[in-house]
Length: 154
Image (cartoon, rainbow, N blue to C red; front, side, top):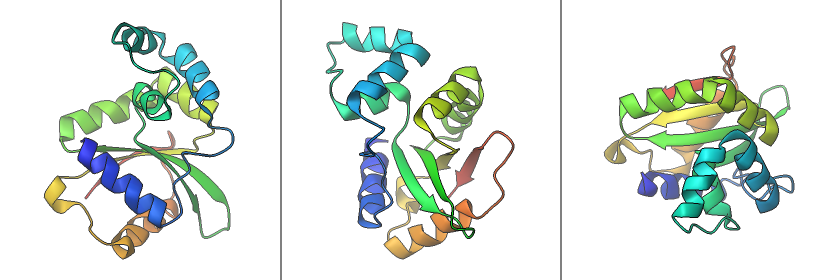
């Protein structure tokens, strides 16, 4: 999954939609949110001697692979949290957890309006920026489900 995550972040960065370094998503803020929403994950990370000042470590604790900012057809900027999974059961479980109270609190605290879980195998990963433009902007213009979370199978 690390490979999927890195490939997606690279594509999102090239498309200039990656929103990881937004001013309101600082390491200090991410750590505060992680401690509030997932204190057991923070404790586990501390036991493993993880660097809690590292942006990537904090995103892993939060269970988010990327944050992107997309403009819909109405001209509204929408912040989307993204996770990439290669197993359907894992993807569905993660989506379910993001719909639960902790996931809702997490999304609200980080200003994430929609949350997408991409189910994609390495061999089916869209290879070009154009494919990703079609996927991302096609999804952002769809009516979001009530929860704001959706599973996208590629």
